[in-house]
Figure (tube, protein in one colour):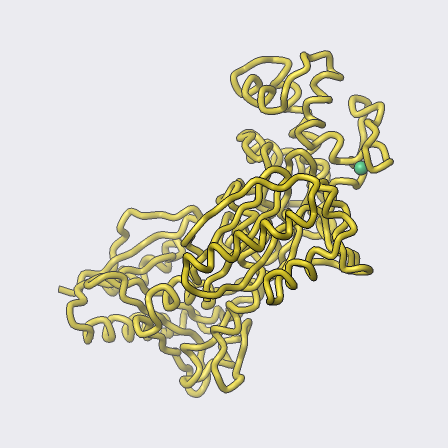
Length: 459
Ligand SMILES: [Zn+2]
């Protein structure tokens, strides 16, 4: 089923259709009928109708909106596109489109997009931050948006800037009625106002960034203050949520120095001797709204698709729950405590895009108990990508050998297969030696996580 995501922005409404592997199939946009609610609903409906006609098939529809859905009334609140506020947008879109529609605010969609197949892919707890005209945020846990009891989870922009210092005073007043909100310092307008307060020229935020990075002293000093405040503000999020990854989005996520500078500074404010949280630049940029909106349905379906028909284990499951009958249908597998191997995400790329027939999986048994598994898929006519997982409690006892042996034996039975490629091999010497014993050699390819690719020629 095709997934459509719609992003209702202040000036344009964007639509994207994604296939099951997350690739763009079609993208369209139309100007937002500013200030006209009925026309906004109609414009979304028309975009979806036209896309489905063009695609020749139905789709699921997810929508990114500014603001949040009030749980009390089911209506939009806190939106800066104010014609949406107080409106029953979800019900009105459902009536127009004749189906259930999922809605989430744009920050949540950003966080979901980056958590599912973006910068924070594979991380369990992700905080997505919008640093733009306003400051917002969204939380994704185990690839699902955390909405919260008040539908404001992740909305940190109107918390006070923590640990104010003399140079933060007087506290700037905020449109929300409070003073010293994080947004008044860390939004684009907040950055520009701070530059002016420090005696600088009145400049657009983008201009301050460009000049600061080019070495202009006053602009560089403003960026340094921004960086230090961002470190303080994010440290308080780390203290509460303790996320695995924080992904920056919005216009100010383009400030390159933040990714080194902030993690250097936030340790002083985080209640831990070391901070393992990663601060990441976004992968999908301006496409995050439509992508995250489209994934609003997929966040359930990834697991449903992967579940066996007999109602057997849905992810995450432990290796013990895997049987020879269900091995090719399980969702996520919990391997080592917090670390998980996303079979569902592999499956998404492997069998939904390529057809399940290409995928071969086998459990590795210790007596009756599955303790690991190995999978292999056709990449082209001759090469294969393989993965292998052994429960850490059983590592070092020969099961890795057994998995590699089965993998190679299976590859040799495949007509036309003359080499096996292992992706995502942890780059530690012990693992590399293990594969090396079977003749695998490092291809020289290393991914962003530091994992390596290894290859065995069968000829
Ligand atoms: Zn405020």
